[in-house]
Length: 136
Image (cartoon, rainbow, N blue to C red):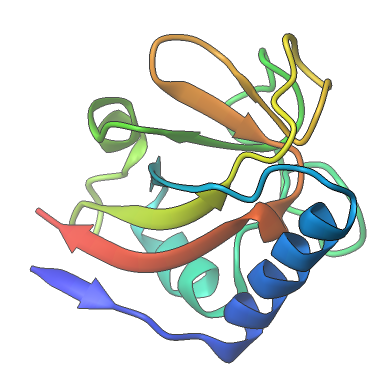
């Protein structure tokens, strides 16, 4: 089953991030990425957007460490995110539109940076627009 979400809040944040990158002359090419999380987090992410763990007011705890820097971790393929989706209450991964912006060479550089294999870390949660939830 695939659910489609249309959140005005997340859409506006993503549009603002895109405009900010464009204003600064930074690439706004979009890509699609997968994100795995506990089932109970899915509705919150889909309606209010991602949050960077350990950062800012109302931030969320960093659950799986920050080996590759602080940010939202996602992947271009579903294999790794599936491993991070919890079994309780069903399993699902989020498919999101992503703005890589200025790609850094190492953690903390740029708007995003590669971690390993197909993983990416996004510095700002507004660079991601959660659109689909793929249940399995």
